[in-house]
Length: 596
Image 1: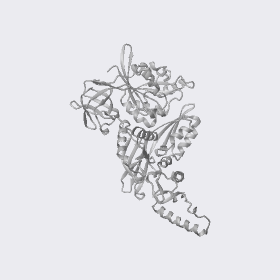
Image 2: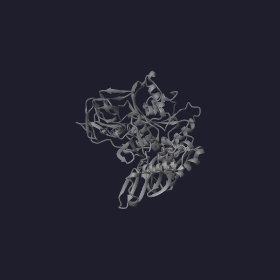
Image 3: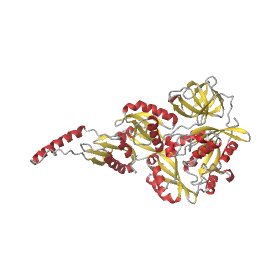
Image 4: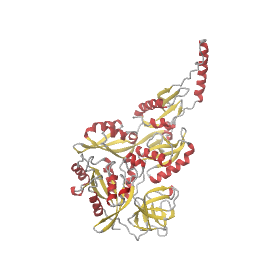
């Protein structure tokens, strides 16, 4: 156990974590040179296409120093704010972290956020400056920022390059020297923490865990404490590039277990594994419950696929514990699920994974956040979608979630960023100049205002330099209204949204204008209206497609043509009464991109 080191790599998005992990795998000869490829741990197509890490990846390496052989269990983590839950799970399974900072960009918002997660768990921190081979690298300036943040000595900071491999041997040396060996008793009752799991169609659920205390042998009878389910450990082993079976794993090790679990609900991330005949006294605590930030309805395009969508979401939830869902129904879209996500990127990734991994064609409703509604009878309820809002007369107060947002940017885009946040009903709390050309801004912002396009706009006005991180602060009273979209007097519940009263008129007008462009013309007029309660605040009309019924008249009296037109008019009137307006899927998706 003295020769085991469990650590993860944390950093802001695109600071070179995965490339640094590649060099470590090469140096420890975990991967053959012929099998080596860039960002080898990012094994999902989506990760490679977007150049981001979505899932944490655990892998075991062997490293020799001073005649001793060490087992290094590395977990490569995502850097985007939407996947911070993955980081918190990885940190729970480690004793130390390698904190990576880009030499060209310096400390960013997510670096600080992930660092605080590590400090809460009292982990050993090894600071590393990456990308020092780039011509615009400023390692001295970044070193000053790290010293300010950590209070460490300049000599402790390692300069490295994931591309050239410079500094990587130093990092491995410091991991062995500084990060403590896991504490635990191999003779004590088994106590193992599940930090991740995946679904294999042939072998069932594979759970990844870290053994805190005790020993696990192949064939042992084990129990998952929270779900109270009992299994036999058919196969146990360690995680290398592939699953590597072992007969016995002791305290401090990170491994996997296959026990023929077929239903995904039986494995929960954060659960404790113990023996049936000699159980541990208490479960492992300190594991965070996920708090979704954004809610949206996901519906199958074909209503017959409802059960298939349920099983796809369950399998996806196993691999992505931050996804939550519950059944709901909509008049326009039929049966589906109300899903909770950590942010808009997370929502986009889940939709994309449903399509690629499970071949599910889905449609999503307008994303929104959760609101607290106080009714006249004193009851307080949580509302996740606009259709669940009680009648206006029964509401005394609506509260919306506010966040504390941290933005680190260059000073040349300071004015534009402050303007953007103030437009989104934000309030500047503090500004702190980190260096002469970098400033940290702290804002009070309503969560609903950052759901749509806030991150994209922030990136474009700061030319990609601004970094953004946030956490939920509290619920506050707000003047919110439900904005409904009516098509020929019929409400389309999937397009309803809750918005601030000041934004409702411009939003209603924009939605009507966008729908006018997107809805296909029918043989009758379509009235598109935006309404708050019974009051219509905006209207557009999609004009009818006219068939030339007079084409067959060649010459003759004008009364013949008039007679045909009158007949057509009556038919159109009758059609409008029974006409049903179909909203194409493209329209639902495009209406969300109003700010474009």
